[in-house]
Length: 166
Image (cartoon, rainbow, N blue to C red; front, side, top):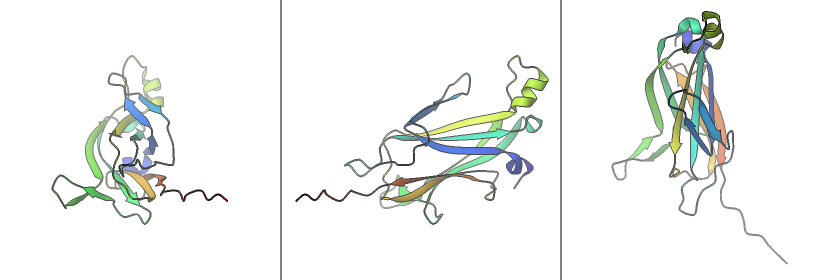
């Protein structure tokens, strides 16, 4: 746990599609903050993206942080998916070291301090992922701080019962 992890503002969400503009760092979302990710007939989810946003006070910038994004089931356990080795599942957990900084492009010090540092990161699952129907949540934490993590709940609905007529 670090001082920055205790004061950072963390947001995690899902969208039909998301990306981050290369030169500006601004996220673009289509169909953001949905809560249902249906399965295709192939047994994988439809395409979706996960957006993680980390904001910190300018006084901490620039600063290196460790971030982790993971997929959890309803009980908080890591979700495992088929891996590169046959018959061997791997948890869906991604970790990275990121340098977070406040923008400097022509801003005055008071403007930079007002904005603070921000890091926008996207994971895109363009082919979907093989999930069983159920309740899940994406989890974002920095510097190993589980108490100040952000979570986003969603569900993968099961097959609907057939319509009964007559």
